Length: 86
Image 1 (cartoon, rainbow, N blue to C red):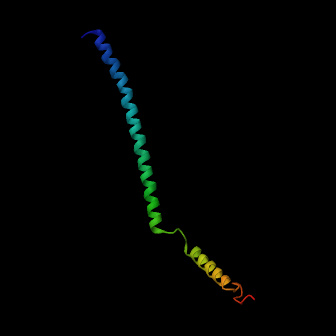
Image 2: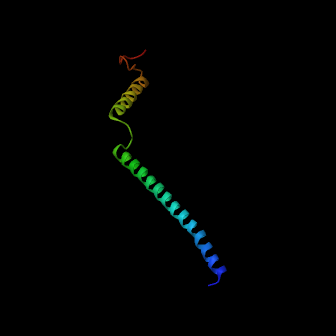
Image 3: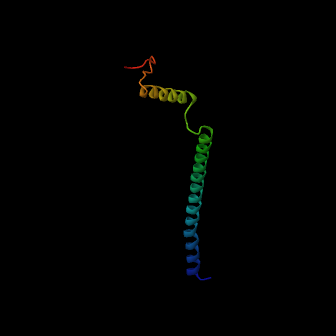
């Protein structure tokens, strides 16, 4: 075999070897990022399914109480003592 061809073949193998390593590293990084993204999206979906509005029972009760107080104030009552304001 011609020494020039042998040198060219060896150079190609060495250069392409670097491309294979870079491609493998890119594949590994992409896989890790994709798995992480899917895990985060899955966890978010489970949390939203378990707690649709994100409010606890105590927060819901406080919102309802505040809503009732606002309705009473609109009708002319003070929420503290429920007496008509003249």
